[in-house]
Image 1 (cartoon, rainbow, N blue to C red):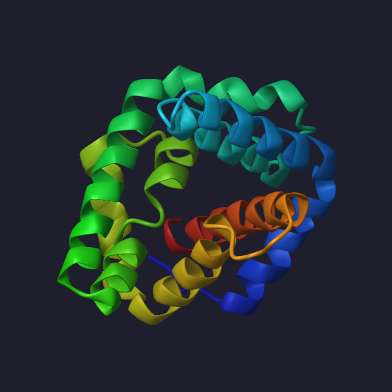
Image 2 (tube, one colour):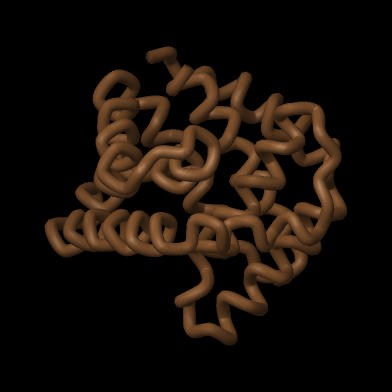
Length: 180
């Protein structure tokens, strides 16, 4: 298992974002709209589709806007994995604020591992925990930076969508470095 290099994750994240900017931005807008209208039920599959777009970019392939729906091929795994990751993160939030930061970092790589490494639910949670254990500081930093973007601490929705897309790219770069 490798170590997270924050600079490399940001650099590779920007490179991935630049290669497929249009499908990523439109895909994120579709993710927000469809996820919102479904009351979050379809959100894990849509986020999985975003990681599939980034994976295509990583592999040198050209992504298409329709790739955002690719996560539906793994809907059950992504839904249950996302639910368990949310429960684990919530337990940390109940414990205290710092616990939320730590538990969120422990499960930050669940979605990319399910999509990119074709792992099952337990295997992806275990691998994400293992990555955290091996590189807790880098994982917390990536989690905080991705979380700030992910949960919309930016006032304008378009900027929030673009920032979220770049966070997805950074997570993908981080998971590729950690789980070789």
